Length: 395
Length: 75
Picture 1 (cartoon, rainbow over the protein chains, first blue to last red):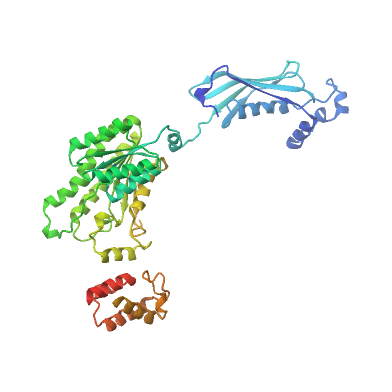
Picture 2 (picture 1 turned 45 degrees about the horizontal axis):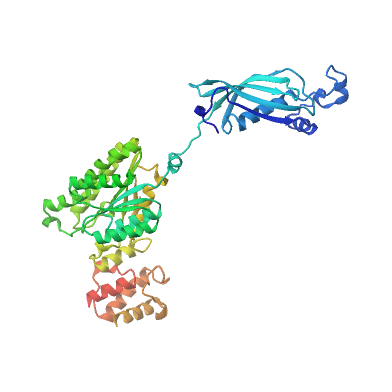
């Protein structure tokens, strides 16, 4: 279907059709109009027309065809038509039906068409004016965005961690270029880069201390220099969570978790958002923790920070969604990674046994959901928290 | 050695061949593992290994691997 702004005054379409006896029979069958002037040769011979006359509306119905299929086409709403039947049409006549744009009504988004039907002798047999409204198709933004040229770029913070590494690889599989952030493990970052490139995607590695403002700014600047844009940020940074009894906690234990989960996330988002706003599109994915909903002892410093991250995610999602930036969260249960290697086997076995899906989460489980949130398949999600816990918590 | 004994106890309690008890055995794949037999299993394990399984561990004996681990802790 043509869009309103693609139609110009003077645009014209035509179609031709030769009227047959079968056309008349079908028209009579459909409408019940068996006026003898149209169907009875003997009767017609007694009139001034001498031969049967084709129903005027049969010819005029081809105006509907031209409006519905050509100008403007699918979705056209034909709401007005004047008609004058100037000459009779006979079986065997070849009609040329034309529609030409006379006027455009920008306010109401409709067009006026001069509609004419000529016979094979170039005589006008029918004429009139049609008014047609153009219905806007409801196209999901995701469909629009799918037409974008070139791959999207994702920055994976903590790209060398268990979830981070799986995320880099999953995103590459799903067609993203990847900026792999690492803190110290350059060798592993290089290996992940090689892995990403196996999927025909581009990757760079960038080192940064994510508790340092200048490092974060430099990291994002390097990413943009390399790929011109950053479409997605996946915050996968994590650290070992020490078990500390409440009475033994000191404020710096809280601060450490809050700096990693809140301060770094805040600075990363604040730095990357102007670029995303410029592009009118962006995805930010934070990683939560099941412990914020199903707490355990000795983790109040960590749970406090992860709970704050839920608030940060929701409030920023609300504020930035109108600018096209979708901020969401993935909340895994206990994930089998290097970070959780020190958790006692009994806890892992118990957790798996108490999980409806009877196992611990894998980094790939989390990465799959992160990639979904990074993709345009999730473009109507903002402030959402997707739990990846095998059914441990169902809300 | 204890692991074989554990499977033998489970075999007797659940009335199934010992060979059918895999390392992934749990109430998900042993049909007879109901709440009554679970209590019988605890009593049988206590008797076999001459231990007392603490009350807060009773609900944790959810599968063969956990049983092995908890018995080992109590020996």
